[in-house]
Image 1 (cartoon, rainbow over the protein chains, first blue to last red):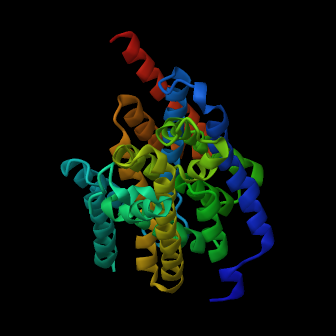
Image 2 (cartoon, rainbow over the protein chains, first blue to last red; image 1 turned 30 degrees about the vertical axis):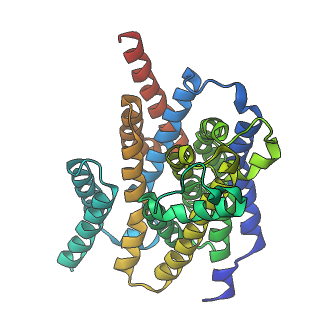
Length: 116
Length: 246
């Protein structure tokens, strides 16, 4: 493993702080400083939670629809099938995360092996 | 492993409380889910050409899986720093209500705000869930130490997972590398679905997935934000409509 892979350049680390650490951490610190007087069940927070969930859903979709790196070697139908199969088992097993993840992975690997 | 009773002398030392927090990571399935998720994040960082140090720093200083994935995927697909920062900050808003609801569990009348800074930093969905489960069994004056232990344990698990995932992605065949990358969407999808108790959560999750491919066609660079705000607002509308007609 090379120096570039282990440490990389300082510019990338600076980007991490500007685009990642500060925009994320600011909400925790706001919660610490101003949280006392806020009603947890307020309508604004219900909306915020819904948007945050939908953004996370978009990220999940992005990784499956426009896969990075090695995942791009898996055909579209097989990726969608793996997520679908995992979801079905997740629902059938009364929401077992473990069963869903294992099923999705096995489906993808079996499909890859079968396709050759 | 059961925690000692509230009046046990075990709780007299804050270091003991820290150790009990540390050991409590073995008491939850969420530790395995976190491990798997961060294995995926390590692999993702490798495949989008970030360094291992970068991946470890993101875990240490961001400490929020979704934000880290958003950061890696947006920067990796050519978004600007501003676009990534906006997507990250919107995803992180959910930390605000989490911190607001979890800190009162640890506070005593004499607790100073600066004593809670590290606990606030450690707050993310896993810690938030576990605090509600474990803290009633911990004496109030030892809860901050306990949470520090629990959080440090979870961070260590994730740093290890990042490193393992990064090296696996670098050395495995393409098929196994793909399998590790697939862990991230699967674990996020199912853990979010599991936490979705209200109809609004389910609508937000489902619509958020379905609307993303449409939003991506607009090529605005803010695809995730557009689909997220639209899907989330519709989900809120459903919540509001049900409240009114309840």
